[in-house]
Image: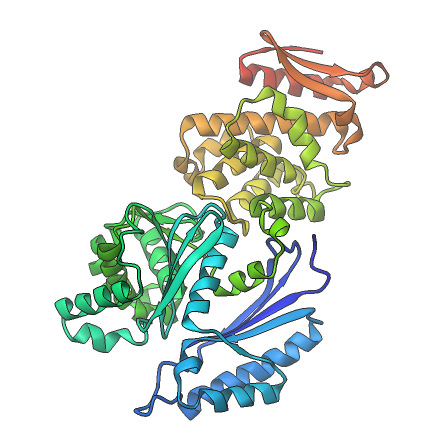
Length: 484
């Protein structure tokens, strides 16, 4: 299902005010516009707990711009939400009146609602998430337990990055005690997080992950689904404290997040002590995506976001009517893949025609780039690499992908299997000329030590020299003999 018109989320947060516009498949819409202004509504609260006039005017100026942009973009649906700073400020109601005067209808989320939406966001991008979600914002920290595709519970604590400095200044033991008390009071001191993943949501923790990726020479620039060991925050604390803005040019780190990194990392260490997670997993999806996910029907939520996104990309970039599902069914009899790999193979097939517009010498490179750097979710680094290896082979890259820096995220067995998928895809694409009819009237199968390609008599002439060569290449990769 495709969104008829773009959808927009306006997020009035404690640190930033942001407009994100989405379009495409409703299950996993693509971001077509994203702009934020660091208004700092929660950064400069005065002694009366009020947002400063300067911060309010920065936010309102941004919102006026957003309102005009949304009208000109012909937005179909919009949600405007405010979080901790506006919720808790003494002048929050007056500020919201000014937001309404612009033309918006803002909804102030409670702390519990924030946690639920953050949990929904994680489920939108990691459907099998099973653990504790931590959403670190400027004014608050939300915890939510997710399992079985649902948010089971959530709570909010006044531990946002803008509020941490005075707590940290009390000393390590006092800070640790405050965090422990907050976790227990929120109902998360029951051991439910032990040995389960802890899902990190929020800009400060994403920046922390980017720093760790730089330190560990991680070969992909994608933070979503990036994993860290539970003891990693302790190991990198000195590096976090030594980060210098002047040395960050050319990196993926956001300079405005640098000052918050040490305190965000200290908080993460204390949460690890309290929750005892088995892994730390970054989610680039949070409240905004949770709001979109919350509006979906159960049937729409059940769809695989990786497959939906790959199908949409294939539909938009392919030469003819998209037929990746048929291509996958055509090559499937040759492979005995577990479900986790079968869905990666399907995703690769859905993308099998996306690089045709590139020069033939660069099609493999284009396919690899799309697999490694595309805005995919519900997939980890190794999964991206397997799809990349398949597309490389599909577009004639041969064995060159094995030398790619990202290849080290997979085992040789995984790379070899993905390469065989690609060779099978390449055969199917050549046989049918990129359209479905000839695939529907032929069959690829393994019979004994033979890789048999069966064609209906009236289509026998399709077995030309190029098809025969690709048939032979695939058979050899499978340790079989070709037969047609």
